[in-house]
Length: 542
Ligand SMILES: Nc1nc2c(ncn2[C@@H]2O[C@H](COP(=O)(O)OP(=O)(O)OP(=O)(O)O)[C@@H](O)[C@H]2O)c(=O)[nH]1
Image 1: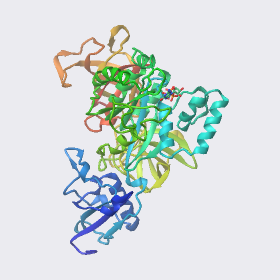
Image 2 (image 1 turned 120 degrees about the horizontal axis):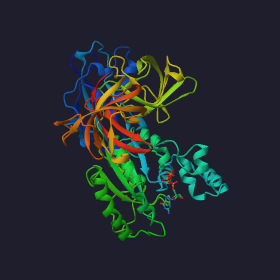
Image 3 (image 1 turned 120 degrees about the vertical axis):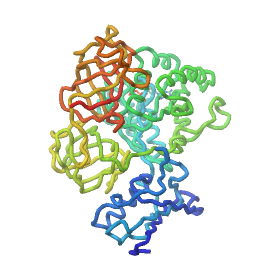
Image 4 (image 1 turned 45 degrees about the horizontal axis):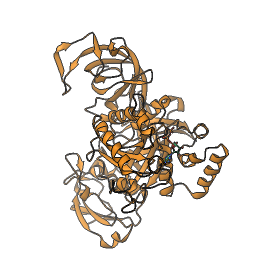
């Protein structure tokens, strides 16, 4: 079929890892647009094609006949599994370059072919977030025994024996000495079918800004709750972080919450079914209020971060009758794939930047695909940069699919030109850089119970943090988000009231309306270390 005008067939073998390879299944999918494919497939296909062709990238000319996505949901059964062979019919008529290799076979399942998920571990101070993150690194073979032994010895030296596992994640000196996570730790691990970037957020109130930036990058939240007597109760108090973290996660667009009821081994708990059920009775309705519904977008798992129980291997049968489900890693591995916006314009909100033989920027690619050697524009300053290196999970790549956490080495900008909250964009589709916008927000925790125009606060949106002023309260809004014309331009807004407001930022910011780019249109307003409003941008003013 090579070089003919008929459809060209590409067989992609996504093999092994186990016996599945022997029982391969032939599935045929007609594809006209690889950008609509599961990322692990399109990424490989693109890399292979782009290496062989100096012409336009493959996804420029292909279009979808039978897309994987139905109503924006990925059909799990059509996603490639290890051992399956997928057949892609590509109509070479549509492309000037007809020399497309007919068969690509990939013998090894590599990290690049697995679905990439970003996970944030959140929860009250000392709930056990770092311990769990650290233990996950050990159980998935990311931290070797020698490094761990060194951490254990160092921890003992400063009298903090029990902290050694959390050091696998908390890598800076200050964090080690204080035992507090002060910046969002980053680590990677793989399960059989998926790869994860794990973000360990600081639990302490002082560091909530870092936590908001981290949470804006996450697909899945792991909310750690301590089952220890006294600690569980403290996490729920008015200023406990459980409440605030759950709210921020929902506002930032974290789709799914895995709730880990941790410290089940503790002397005050001893894997008591009664204690577990008592905790669930309070937690389930509590999380429902924030939009995390048990069995729909929330799932509860009992565990011990310290002993590792129920993190990798499920609990032994009969050990804990109150829970019969999968372990944490089993659950994460089996989760339904998350739909990604591969064929939308590139939007990479920048979380971090530094210099290392060139300027490096880091963040989660919100939409589009980034290609090595291609030029993009840094907003709001309109600086055109070339991508010189793409690093995903410490491995170099030629194409970065939407949804992955990555680092890019860029040419054309100095370190001082880039700041967290800036956005790398497709040069032909720049994101707006504005100072005024309208948003529908719900106020809460207001000092004195009300706000009026002139109120100043701090705006958080994706990785952006900027001072903002409330220019005016446009009107009250009903439950559907529609303006109530009878209540226009009120003098003040109360806590728990939904209103449309106009906000002005101190400098130009890269935001979008929620309708166009949800993750660039969700906002949180903070004042004096309290979250005072959450909402969505409805209109860009200028
Ligand atoms: N018994 C028991 N103790 C645990 C468990 N998980 C964590 N701990 C202990 O709880 C304390 C706090 O654990 P961390 O992992 O540092 O908690 P964190 O939530 O990351 O804390 P911050 O970074 O301060 O927010 C440490 O002394 C841990 O050893 C557990 O499953 N069982």
